[in-house]
Amino acid sequence: RRKLFIPQIRKFSKYKSACHYSTNENLNKISTKTAENFIPFLQRIDIRRTEARRSIIVQVQSAKSYKELWSYCSTFGAIKSMFHYSVGIDPSHFIIVEFENESIVSSIMNSSNYSEGGSGMPTQSNFMWFKAANNKLKLKDNKNANLSVEFGTDIQLEEEIKVALGNSENVSEQIRKLHELTRLNDVGVRLRFLTALQIENAITGMFPHATAYPFGSSVNGYGKTGCDLDLFLKLSNDKRHDNGRLVFHCKPLNSSERSTTQRHMEVIGDLIHLFLPGCGHVRRILQARVPIIKYHQQLTDVECDVSMSNMSGVHMSDFLYIMGELDDRVRPLVFTIRNWAKTVGITNSAPGRWITNFSLTLLVLAFLQNPPSGKPVIPTLNKLEEQAGKSDKFALEDGTDVSFLRDITKYKQKTKNTDSLERLLMEFFVYYSQFDFDNKAICLNDTVAIAKPEHSAMYIINPLERGLNVSKNVSFEEVLRFKNELKNAAWILESKEPKTANWGLLSIMQGPKVVNMFQKLSTRTKPSRLVEIKSIFDDNENESKSPEKKVKSD
Ligand code: CTP
Ligand code: MG
Image (cartoon, rainbow, N blue to C red; front, side, top):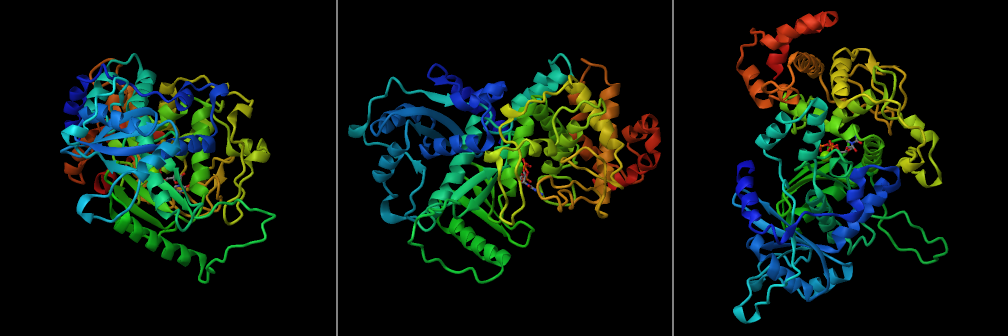
């Protein structure tokens, strides 16, 4: 897919005069990071949900169709913007059409057709295709038509990143560039909210207040291009009409809450599989602590994880979002560390005994709350809880209090930490390579060191549900591997001269090559970089003596 992305970009250069780069007045302000234009997380989600509701996705023959599509759609009402994207190796082309208001989408729905011959389920959704017109009906191109193109609806080419990093002045600039080049862009976010809207619309007949809340990396600001979409599907809203005397008859919930949720999810899984256009490869993972349905929405090329059991993930995303908004070093650092972890094989998109991106993000945040300089970059959750106001009061379904200050413009304590990103990155590597995972738990609620409550290899206290360990899945072998890779990274970063070949981040992100190289080595062979690292980490000698294990577990 990556290779095919280049011709697509080149093809587009022809339309450049007609294309503009997307701007989203409200949301672009976020990236400028000043207290005045901060938008609280749930409000931001609402803006995006409303934007999705006044949008449709139309499959077209090629990007060239945009003028004709603009003309056709304009007959229903004013268009706000159009965005092109493509999916697949032999690319299918799509245009997101955003209208000025939602009622225009309703008119379009009312006058759109099902496929001729009655093939296919007669479902109605925001996903459509643009039929070729017979000549008589062909509309004149609309002069106002314009199409936005945001390069990188897929992973940016490695080569492009390499050049950008190679040309940077220092490691801090490399970190910022990596973040800019790989983060989820506006089209990526729109596609995820439209994917969420599809499932929400599909069940609103029976559950008029159903809401599909996107959470996780799609919305917390740590998502990179192509990241998955985590959805929490809530069938009811919490609004009560206190004076209403007529009450709906509802089916009683007669089995345990968990098994009821599992049954409901099975049905939702079937519904996605059987009725929703573009949705396929449905997998039901119902025995997990949080049961989920996984599926792939082919029309947006988004991988989705739907859960229905609790809102904790949504509030957690709010917490991560706030941390990213509080200081503009947080996200670039998290991106870099997630990227590094992926390339050296510490994380893996398949579930298993390794560290997840979410755990890794919490490790970075915990480090930033308590860096070696003693000057926190971001506050602890306890500090935010202390300042929670009336509008910040939330509780989970089981009553767990998840109240904390959501509007950071009200957070008065500014950080005194002025460390460069380069320094923070280096300190992160050293900090966790020496961390006593055997005895200590990582806690984001407070900075005091906490003894591990049980013997998991890595213990990260879930900041919102404190009885849970976020990294319970991680094995002792993986912790060892993590520490070895941290040492490697610190050593390589320290020893490589700036501006030489593959310097800075490039030197520690030799990902797949390094991993493959290690895989080929016999388990008795010591990879040289692991041996070398020993000398600068004398105090951790015991662990450095076990590179064989690392090779094996790779
Ligand atoms: N989450 C949680 N507790 C966990 C695991 C996940 O609260 N033990 C929530 C977090 O809000 C997390 C979200 O679920 O961000 C989604 O989890 P996951 O998809 O694993 O992580 P992402 O942050 O979305 O990262 P990725 O880009 O790898 O999907
Ligand atoms: Mg995710």
